Length: 107
Ligand code: SF4
Ligand code: SF4
Image (tube, rainbow, N blue to C red; front, side, top):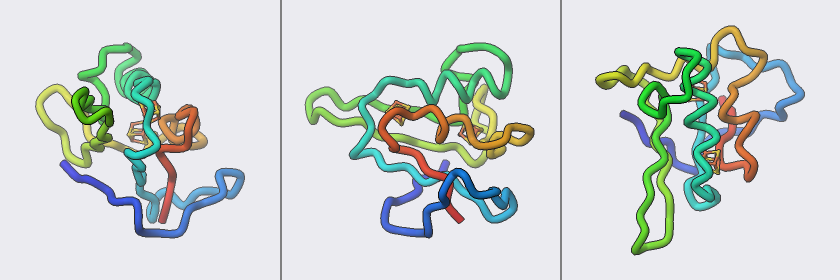
């Protein structure tokens, strides 16, 4: 399990051709609004289901603190597949679909 901090890397313009060998997904938990679109998109990419446990992303909710935390799994954990950077897709679905820019393709 890997947390990717928000103070690193050069952010790609998504209109550029992405270099998948160099790419990682950076998360910005402070922007996250907890919609879970990324989890569902990721699960669909991997298994064509919408089950959140089939996602390489987990969005954790801390109600008392009023915040969310995004976790990206770089290795398989139980039912959860490892992030494969959306191989076969033109761009990472979580990055494409997050409505607030809390996920970015970087390298
Ligand atoms: S899609 Fe974006 S805002 Fe929605 S849960 Fe995922 S990271 Fe958070
Ligand atoms: S890049 Fe694709 S496989 Fe990786 S976390 Fe995002 S949606 Fe899931």
